[in-house]
Image (cartoon, rainbow, N blue to C red):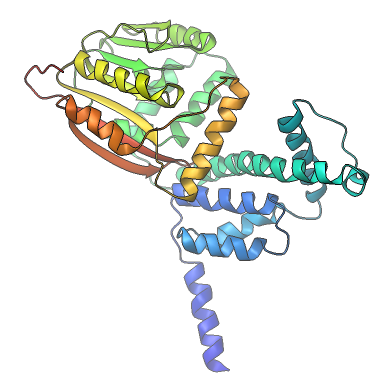
Length: 364
């Protein structure tokens, strides 16, 4: 009996002495909420512990997050899941009645429930993960360099609406790409951001040199209008243009963050070659793609991207090539390349490519 008690005490101690960095805490909460919403009743606890062990996440936090499925919230979760699933399958919502789950439309409503629960799990899990990452991040030692860049960006976007300021605030704290950029030597010369959105990355690049030329483009007119207003005091020029046709100036740094998957395979390769040609000697091309080799995290990332494409009504599906495909085109252009695989705080699986041009002029 004493041996059993000792094993239980050791197991309990091990469970509660696990890592709780922002990324893994967010991943644990995301997984727990997702499992709690998906209708696998009777197996949720087993699935939560099993997947937490598989992906080396904080098990108590994962299990705790599954309790989103409780007697108070369960009716709302079922109703929301059926409505979302019905919308995705038929293009419109319909009034939900619990009696429908026992009537002649049982099969149709069950399919809507299952589909909707998957989407609701991803959305609710993402929100819970984001909130968890911020809380853990705020209680963790801050990166002084990143904190300085965030303050600078905060001043740049101070005149924006509260919605846009909030978006920038959350984006800077949840997306690990900005911490990774501030840790990099971003060189000198003009900065080009293809798919710049609000211009957050451009603002960070100008923190140490407010006179640095900044150029960006995006198809979202509203975000470009905000970027143009916010970056006005800087040496910036942003415009509504398609990155495939954008005239690239000679640049010391070119950024492509979360845009390549909107293009065909051929257009992606052509764009990367053009970027390599436009770089000045010692210039850098930094871009991010989804990691296709991280199992569950890759599937979560692709699912979120597909949902985004659906709501944006792009009429296409996201396309991410293999890491070796991107590596080959960069090597053919004579670039010195390094890659960094990382999990974001939402959690999403990414690969960051950092390609540097040699100090001597090179041509493709």
